[in-house]
Length: 221
Image (cartoon, rainbow, N blue to C red):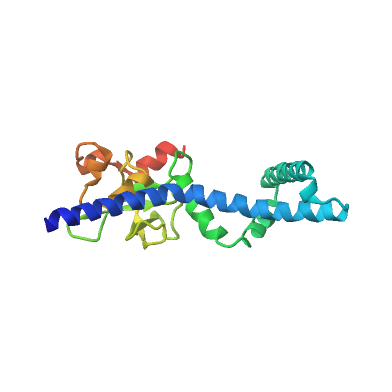
């Protein structure tokens, strides 16, 4: 009975955490939109008051002002992203409370998709005589140590909850079927589920995994 109760609470915790990390990017985006809306609302109200127009008695005009300024803001941001001013514009957004943390989280979720620089789930050796650890590579940029790459061994589902290691490329094996979400499920299961179970594939021998060097040649050329 006690074991069943423990299993139920572990399952409930895992499901809750998965829901939390699924909704985080959406919540982050909504927070930014609401903040921008508040600034635009304040600006439009000041303009209408300057023109001696009562916003409460002219709701349609107020709404058109909000929509117009919002579209203009998006247009300006879209233009600035393509220019050198993008960096300075981004610094302005960093004044929004929690923006930097939310930006990092969204970036990690987005980078789990296909692209030139994606999150890789990898197996690395070197921390046990015959054992391996499953970790993440958030970037495929070579380390300051030649032929080494940074691998994060996560301790918690949070992106910054782990240890960084510089690992030689010959000791890094890419699990190509896995992605950031699969690794998140792996962490949340606390060893109850193996990576093979999460990916719904048969266990592989080490020779069947792709060496990082081979993966880089395939995707970066």
